[in-house]
Every structure is written in structure tokens, then in C-alpha cells.
Image 1 (cartoon, rainbow, N blue to C red):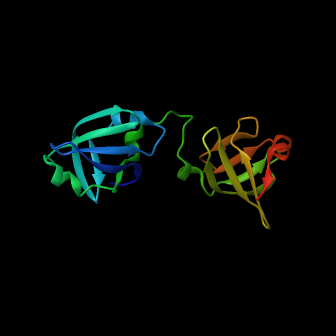
Image 2: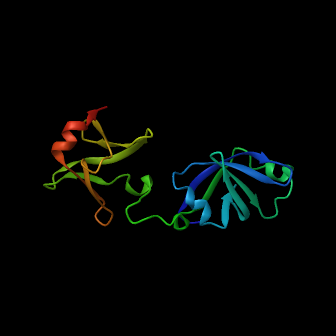
Image 3: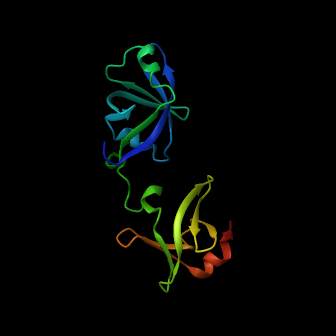
Length: 167
């Protein structure tokens, strides 16, 4: 699977018919609606059924019909192809923007985006300058534009200066 994206982790077998309980590792839960195949342990498995309840996905894979067969998936990562995500045009994956240059609205180089921390309410962008790192919340008033063609993130310098902290 090219461009594979980790979307979950198998917690354990569920029941006696080979179903697996999967913890989603994405905030785009609809991804499970758009796929018919998963990659686990470098093998591809067709999905027979997929249900969401109590924050978990319960997935029945084709040709996995017993608890013992499902046991091999315990604690394993679940992947899908990036194209299956059907992301909106204003949605992106963190890996897609890491390494982008960060510039102010005058085009002056600030640094590079090296890390994105997720704390729940808002993502925090970490920017590497020559001699230090700064972090700032990912707010549209701070980060004005992300250009995927030029790989440049433009900031509003005055707003950035108000909210950025030195790490």
C-alpha cells in the first residue's frame, strides 16, 4: 500500500467469531466508512463489517473467523491508503506539512515547521529557528496560509509574536 496512513490500533479480539476491537488513531472517523480493506502486519484484509460504538471500531475481517485467528492482531497497527481518507480541500495530514518553511507576510524566512503537538483543543506548531524553537497554537489569525505547491506556511507576524513561546 503506497502512502499508507496509520488509522488505528487493534486492542484485542472481540467475541468468538473473529471480530477485532480497534482504537481509532484519527479524528476523521469517517475514514472507516470509505474503506473496504485494511493493512495489518503487512497483509491486506477485506472488511466484512465495521461498527462504531463507545469510541471504538469493531471490525470483522474476511477469512478471520475465530478468536484464535483474530488474536494475532492484538496490539498491531492498522493502516489504510491515504487516498481512502477523502479529505476536504481545507484538511491536511500533519506529515504533509512537516518541513515546510515558515515565513511572515513580507516573505521573510522565520524557520521550519518541525513538529506538531496535539493537546486536544488546538494543535501547537513547533518552528525551528537557527538557534531555538518557538511554538504557537494553530489559529487562523496566526497562520494565514499553507501553500502546498511552494511548501510555505505564512504567519501574521504581530499575532505570532503575541502567542508564540520559546521552548
